[in-house]
Length: 461
Image 1 (tube, rainbow, N blue to C red):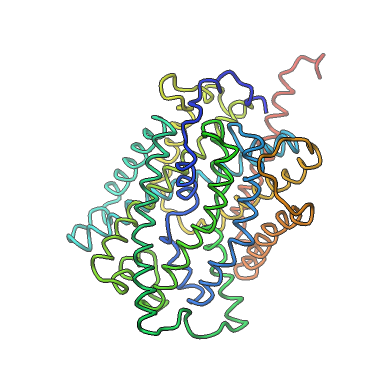
Image 2 (cartoon, rainbow, N blue to C red):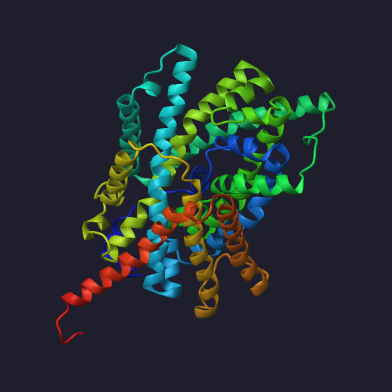
């Protein structure tokens, strides 16, 4: 990609994200802890929910993480996955990957300030009887915009600061759920309670549960490639990415599985597992003090997700601007902070506009858009093995072509299953918005190509 040699890249603050900070920032990009998993239990039942939490990383998260483990250290340049795909399959595929990813992150990241404000509103209402953030749309919007402004500024100030904040956020999220899990497991052992909920999954329940829960669990495990976009700002990327990703998958799975396992024993009514239920679940496990720890995690979780997502997604318009799909000014690097500040500012501005909207369930749209981009990235992994066999790969996936093909086929199969279940449940009309979003990328690309050809002198055409 042309941008990888751009003079503007020399102004980026290199090595500003340490390997440890990268690991915690990856955690915040993928997961805000088990907050958001509550509907999974309500939709699928406890046993299937626990099974999905354990199986999904094997067929969905690990292929993504392994792809990033190999390609991020091998091609450690700003733009990450966009550069991999373009280098393997050309500018059209690279643009599709960039546009689809940026589109889903715009919608996805804009949800987090709204979630923070809603969570804060529920807490104020529950403990102090103040419902202004729930009843007053202007107040709700104002607080959400303040969150966007604050953490957009934090991103402009530097990648190192975002890494430090993400480390603190991740620890604040993990700690209360780790304590809850330990206390609950000890109680269960002392009470001789079974460690798995009783019952079995009937075939009809399996199909219905998968239809309702697959999108939720896939959404909670996506994003392992996200921080490849800041590779030039990572210290020792050849070592940092494999460590962060290979430790990250089991960490996220554990943060999901053990609190849910403990929770379904002490809060057994699956119908009560709705968004915002974790403080009540924690209260049932360990009392009021444990509930307050989880409340802190519930407030921190959306800002952690937003901050890390903005760091990752803001480098996509930076790369698109280098390719002249967006205004060239977006490649400008802040002379003091060493960040693409205009690209970050544009993303922050879009989020500030979008937080006014009342979004319905956009999980399926996000998952399908992400999956389309992921298919291109895993295809790039295969193509580069053929096209550039001598590329230095500090981390190389073992197992040869059978493993590489499996890495490609597993996520493709997951998205095929999700799409088939969605069509069977809700009909083709359920996918019209997703189809429109996917189609926007090739339309924009070919319109731009036609426009550029029309501006060339006749002799060049």
